[in-house]
Every structure is written in C-alpha cells, then in structure tokens.
Image (cartoon, rainbow, N blue to C red; front, side, top):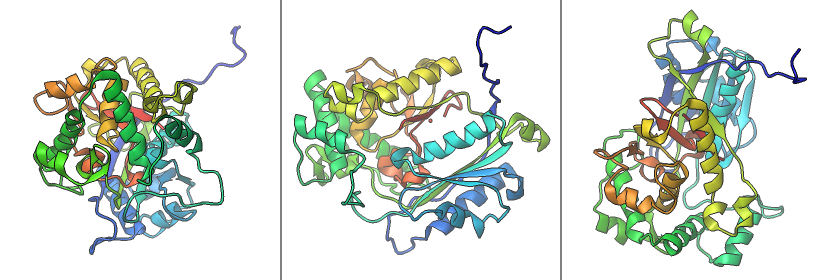
Amino acid sequence: MSSSPWEPAPLRRVFVVGVGMTKFMRPGAENSRDYPDLAGEAGQKALADAQIPYSAVDQACVGYVFGDSTCGQRAIYHSLGMTGIPIINVNNNCSTGSTALFMARQLIQGGVAECVLALGFEKMSKGSLGIKFSDRTIPTDKHLDLLINKYGLSAHPVAPQMFGYAGKEHMEKYGTKIEHFAKIGWKNHKHSVNNPYSQFQDEYSLDEVMASKKVFDFLTILQCCPTSDGAAAAILASEAFVQKYGLQSKAVEILAQEMMTDLPSSFEEKSVIKMVGFDMSKEAARKCYEKSGLTPNDIDVIELHDCFSTNELLTYEALGLCPEGQGATLVDRGDNTYGGKWVINPSGGLISKGHPLGATVGHTCNPSTLGGQDGRIA
C-alpha cells in the first residue's frame, strides 16, 4: 500500500506542432488592422504549419490585455470556425502569451485534451501604458510603494521608472555602466534587421542608441520596447495526436515550462531589482533546469523578456548565465550575440520586434529547441 494518500497521475508529453504570427506593427499606423484580422492570420498560419484542420482542435486558450470580455471568441469564430469548443480568455499583463501557452500545455499534459490552440493578440493604443481604472486599487500599488520609498516617483511613465531604477540599483551595487545597458539595445536592434516580422528593422550605432530620446534617466527610447499591434499562435498536441496525424517530423517537445508569481523577497528586501521580478525569474529558471535535466551550458538560443534593456541584463543573471552582478561582463564578452556563448533575442527582442502583450511570452530558451509572471519553457 502506498504511504501517500494521494499519488498524482503521470504527466503526458506535450509537443508544439505548428506556429504562426503576424508582423508586429505600430498602433494607429495607416495599414493597421483590427484584432480579429490579426488573430485570424496567426491562427490560420499555425494550422497550416501543423497541417491540421481547426476541427481537430479540442480547446483554445486566447490571451489579450486590452479588449472587452470574450474578444477571444470573436477573434476565432469568423476566421477559424465555430465548433463549440471551450475558448478560455487569458489576461496576465506581459506574461499573457506565456499564460495562454501554460494553460494549453497543462490541458494536454493532464489528459484533458489532445490538441489545443494557444493564441495571443493585442491591438494597443499609442504612447506609454497607463492606468485604466482610477476608482479602485491598482494591482501594482505595493510595487509602487517600494519604489517611492526608495527612489521616489516622478511624472514620467511608471514602467520605465521601475526598470530604470532597477538598473540604477544594479549600477550602485555592482558598478555596471549605462553603456552596458545601451549595448543591449544596440544588439537587439542589430538582430532585428533580419526579422521580417519585427516592428523595427533599423540598425543603429551605440552612440545613436545612447543619444536617442530619453524616456527616463539613462533609458533612451532605443532601449525601451514600443507598444505594438500583432498576434501569434501555437498548436500544442499530445504524443497520441502527433502519431495519429503523422506529425513526428515537425513536433517539438516542451521539455519544461514553469510559471512563478511574486515571493515575499520581492518586497521584504526593499530592492527594486527584486520588485521587478528577479527572484521569481531565478526560481522559474531553476525549476526548468531541474525538470529538463539541462543547464545554461546546454542552451544555444534564448528569447527573454527585454521590455527594457535593464531587464535583459538582470535576466541574464536570473537565468544563471552568469553570477549575480556579472551581467555587464557577459555583455562586454559578447556572449549575448552571434559568435558568443548564446544568441539572445535573435528576433530583435521586445525592444525592436515589438511588444503586443498577448502575442509575446515571458522567456524562451533553446538547446536546439528550448522554450517560458514569469513563464519559461525549456
């Protein structure tokens, strides 16, 4: 007899069998499109890539932040079909895309579904993100309390202040220079030149990155992600589904995926670095490495959440690519680009590719294929 009163059922393997995305665009551009058209293009491309009909999909998890309730249903009905399947709407800020993928994977992993569509889209407004509801508690009130008590708060947009001060704290603690953060913006814009889906495809010199318009303190506009319109989709399937449809040659297994939310240390240590997510990123990465049996040395390609250049450098350390405080050394060695130890954000990252919230994920790693509040795929 088992000593445990409850034994979890074995989890099933999960595979990505098709993907699709749109080009990311500046909101309000002359050729901008509405969210059903964006979602329809991404979904149709993913189904075509998987070579399966929409009727084979058991459930859909649809992520978006800026939109009325049930936009997920409207995005799917008239472009992919109305088969009566459950369509679950997901809203989780910058990890919305990761969360939709996380839910889709769990449905298959737990044996509830054989094939699930994870779809994310966003149609955003111009300018920096702001507070939508002024008559109720804002979700980040405790985060802002910490920031105000340590550095104060100005009239600048809040997000650049949070990540700008996290970078300032890193400089004060470890001696990192503003050039190290600027080099990350330079690198990501350089990478985006080869990505036809990227919102920006212009290359800049390091001097141009540092001299561009200031958003907050040392953070210039070429080190900050823009608001964007766009959509992306992935078809996830069980091993049995892969075999049934003969998809073995294109199936990419999700070896590990973890999601974390804030820990007590996010606030108790009065650190802006911790407040913007360092510890939960570190713990999600640790769990991913443990479950996959891989280490940073096994990885070749990484897509990570570079909402600002400062967060990319912090995430190098959280992922264990280098010791804490040594992100600047990694940058100086060129270990974040072609010819170095890893290619990080070959897409151009959020800084250059764009950041339609529902269509982008937290972090992805690749050991030829690795994928991830913080969501990570290994």
